[in-house]
Length: 136
Image (cartoon, rainbow, N blue to C red):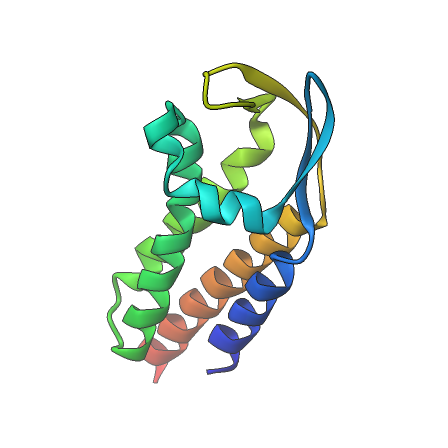
């Protein structure tokens, strides 16, 4: 499916860019691949919110698997992944270290927007696919 391929390519490209810039002790740009790797473990360092945002990734994978099996629940998982990923834009602070100290988000970078784009493509494609399927 073109939608799945496009989504995966956008996601993979996003890993080569910075995700956000934070002010924690000094200004730091954090790469997308760092956040992707740390996301699943964020909950262990007290980052419940960060972990919840990271859950957009497994929801996207669940959507892809469900699409290939024609499961309609993928409409819900794709929208949930999108809402989680989009909600990150409303954050002002993020966990700056394992000690629980927060850093201020200065800006969102290309990696975040590419990641968000991959989820948007997946969500729109999933919804279009099932809309078109029910019209047939």
